[in-house]
Image (cartoon, rainbow, N blue to C red; front, top):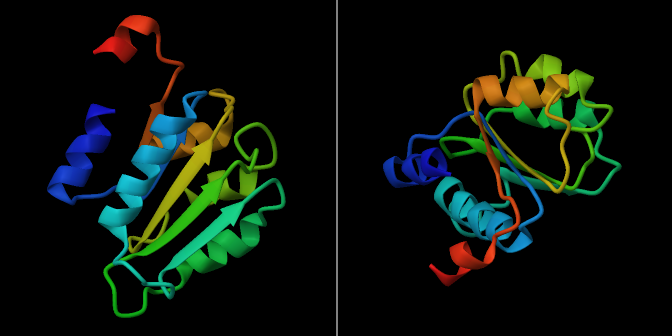
Length: 140
């Protein structure tokens, strides 16, 4: 989580971020902070969001390879896709050498840390787990 805060503060972003775990409030809070830092408000040309199990990896890769329109980067948000449990091989191959102008945000509840996609995202970006907070952490 420290790396994530540092990237937002310095405005030096990686190609991919994976926010995962059971703590939905924190995931959503950091998702919104990253989105605000990466995309100008109202920029619908360079921001695309996918949600649910029917995410087409080929379409995501095509969007990632498209140059941004009057902006520094293209941002792709993928939520609750299940790609980190099965079916993310095509994206895993792409994440070995993604376009320099893309930033992909993955927001997942459950991931398989042994999957190729998890390892590829961790290599080219940042993976942050948001585990359920215990009572002492919440009090702080």
